[in-house]
Structures are given as structure tokens and as C-alpha cells.
Image (tube, rainbow over all chains, first blue to last red; front, side, top):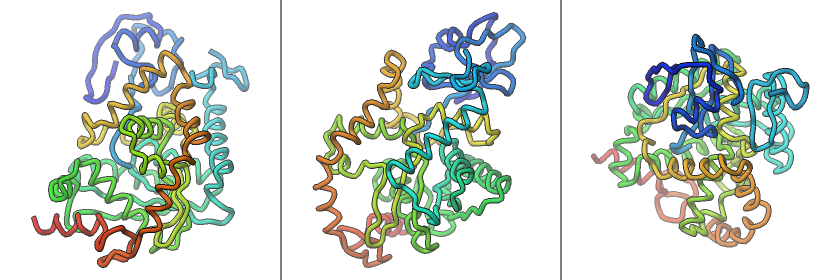
Length: 64
Length: 301
């Protein structure tokens, strides 16, 4: 699994629902997207042991 | 989950709307929300030229994409902030998008064109980096729009941005700021109209929109923004939103619809006291505008 800001990879055992994975990582589901391969998945999607998953943060906070 | 519109398998859920969407319907949802905001708040008139403030991030590139798809004549303006590799990378994303869409991107570079970067500018003006950055952006986007004959500057401020700014302004009862925190700032002498067409979309939706549309945006956060107050407000609001979806929208649109007008007289009075900056001619309350003062101080260092 790829995590961002800072970029890092961790291994998590599946199967696991996307929302459970977000909770397991201590993240807020309003602040991230879950991307399996190159496709977005909803919170109820079941992620398998061999899935490559990116947890992408969506919060930006500078001046614009 | 199934798509609310077509019942195909969904790829993104939007808890605020108690809905989920497939890719095609989600793109349509985002376009509809932007079109609705533009129409409701009379942001952009027929035939008007729009200058999109582009950072290379999800919101500005997503906004530019949607405006082009809605048929607006929208050019982009990228401001190089001199933040090392981050600026190089963000410019690469902005230029890549413009090339892919065949759109026009104008680039202004702070170090090359004005002799300072954000770090130096912030130190010289004794401001936080995000404050110096915001000041530079507001001035230069408006100046570029005036010089280029654009009718409107469109920025990628989304619902989360506006709710967080409102939260901060209410915490400190910054009534002057509350009087100016509107989806549309009307044009006035020296200022083009400024609009925020993404106010009906959260930043999670904008990130999802870019993923679905294959827009290659810069995911990494600006290194200057780390730990700033604005991010703390967003975190606090997202904790509330997680427990009570729709809270950010209710907070922001409740303000716009029921309270914002109460603070307008202060903002209008401040507008009436503006006169041209002795250096650049931009409207200001002093002899020299804050941007020209920042440039002068930065060049002295």
C-alpha cells in the first residue's frame, strides 16, 4: 500500500473493506481517497491481499 | 454501492449527498455543481473571458478542465513562487495540462520577474509564508487579468477552503474579512470580478474528479504550508463532517444565505476608501499597496 505526504509503503493483510483500512491507519475518510490499481473505490469495497492500493490525501492548505 | 443515477457499480461515495456515483455520472455531477454555482451567483456572463488561477494542484486544474468542458473561454495563469523543486514540479503539471487540453497558459515567475521568492518575501514583509504567497497571488492574478483584458479571475477555492476560512474568521470575529468572503467579488475600479466556481464541491470530490478524468496534478503539499492554521481548521471541520456529513456545507451556505449580508457594510466602506497605489496604480488604502511594499522590502534584503 502506498501512503503519501510523506510517501511510504506499508503492508496490510486483507481482505479488508476500504473504510476499515482507513480506520486501521487512523485516518479520516473525509480526507483521503482509496485507489486500487488506477481506479477509485468506495468505502465498502473489499481489498484483497494482492491488491496494490494508494491512500491519497486530498487536503491542501496553502494560500490560493 | 451503486451509482445514484444509473445504478451501475459506484467508484466514489459523497456522504454529504448520501450518494455514490460511477465514473461517468460523477463527472457529470461535478460539472453540474459548477454550472449551478456559476448560474446561481451570476459568476460568468456569456462571452466573457476567464483567467483561471492555476497552481498545478487538483482544484485549479479540475476547475480549468470543467470550465473548458462547459464551453467557457478560459486561459490559465501560473505563478512561479520560487519554492525550489515544488515550484518546478507544480509548473510541470500546469504546463502538461495546458498542452494536453490545447489551452493557453501564461506564466509569471516571482524570482525572475519581481526579484524575490516566497521565503524571502515573507521574511522581508514579516509575514507568514502563506500570507506573503496569498498577497502576491491576489495582486498578480488581478494585474494579469486587467492587463490581458479578462473579465473574470476564477480561483479553485472549494467548499472545504471556504468553510475553513469562515471557521477561522468566526473564531476571531474578523468582521472585515467576513464582509468579503463571498463566492463573487464584483468588479470595481482597478479590480476585475473574482469568482469561486468550486464552492459546491469538496476537495475530496475535486481529487476524485482529477483521478477519474486522468488529470495529472501535484499531490504533494506545499512545503511552506505544513502546520499552518488553515490546515488545522480543515482537520477540525473534517472531524465534525465524519460524524455529521453535510456540516461543512450547512455551515458555509448558511453563512452565505443568512448572514454574509450583515457584514457587507464594513467591506463596502473599506472599498470606498481606496485610491491608486503610487507605484503600480492598483487600488490601495495607503500610498503604496501591500504588494509593492513587499517587493521593495524584499529587494532591499
